[in-house]
Image (cartoon, rainbow, N blue to C red):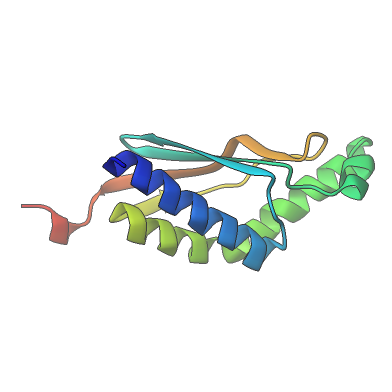
Length: 123
């Protein structure tokens, strides 16, 4: 397994654990895309049938999107610290975008942009 595949596997495990522990969600699948200064994690199947039904109306959809964003913002320092440990880079920002009708967090799911390597890593 090459380094990129190992990193993707570790990130998948961390995100899956975070989702279960902090968001009470078990995604059907997790996909990781690594780029030089960005990490994109897409989750499939993150909303329950009742939430999907509730999200059919504009007011319900907006309320659920707001709730997911606020809950994520409260818990995201835990995820960011774990990602920083894996990538050995500081996370500049992260966000959660949920498509309440499909139940997916993405395609812009967990966008974490990494800054340059930590000063201790630079020569």
